[in-house]
Image 1 (cartoon, helix red, strand yellow):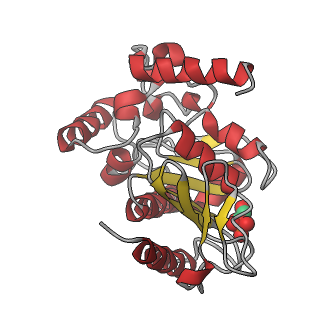
Image 2 (tube, protein in one colour):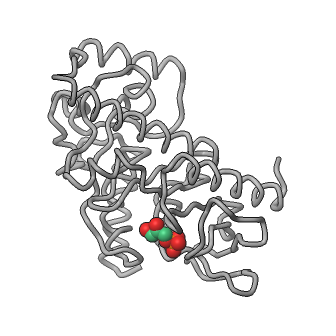
Amino acid sequence: MQNEYEIKKEMCEIGKRVYMRGMVAANDGNFSVKLNDHEFLCTPTGVSKGFMTPEYICKVDENGDVIQANKGFKPSSEIKMHMRVYKERPDVNAVVHAHPLYATTFAICGIPLTEPIMPEAVIALGCVPIAKYGRPSTMEIPDAVSEYLQYFDAVLLENHGALSYSDSLLNAYHKMESVEFYARLLYQSKMLGEPQKFSPQQVEDLYEIRRQFGMKGKHPANLCPNAKAGKPSCHSCGGSCKSTAAPAAADDADLVASITKKVMEQLGL
Ligand code: 13P
């Protein structure tokens, strides 16, 4: 088990990787780690995440309010987006937001990553929907992302970037790498010609491999609302998951979570 200082060091290391791999420019991007239900570490706003040292890292509560920050540092301007993920996905322990070139290009063009072209992308991600555009730092982004949280472990943010989350910081970061690699492959294969897509049966075979691996997280193999409703899954429905993630088709636990969320929203809680 890592202590707090070790987690801060790991956040700096991930910052270097995100920056060196060109997944962010200048001061862009942010990430966070859950310590417990009431304490979270997050990157500070307005600094290059490639040059952080442990004292840059801020600590916030579940509302994103500061618990501890060294002089000159304030939590990320997108902290509400991170907190929404933790609130709605209790299995998540880390969140990564970046602007990787190819994934962001798809997000700008409004094209979700839904073409099954490579086994690892199908197994790790399934497909990656696009959450509708929201102004940075406002509640518009958490609200837009919320629709997809019960179904996917990565989403594109329209005209903005990408968001990934997982049970550890390294896994959340790897998910971001997978999104970007998938987007890049899709882009480049479309440049060369028409990518050869897996058939629905081949996709289902890969989903079965994922199930056998017992991989954690949310994935269309288990949760695609279309597949649950007996309709073609994301990879063959042209990204219709983008428009509706019908709670009626989700499994019981997700259905309860979804209804609870809506009731709480209506009660203003
Ligand atoms: P922060 O530096 O405030 O985390 O913002 C960077 C960013 O990428 C906003 O989308």
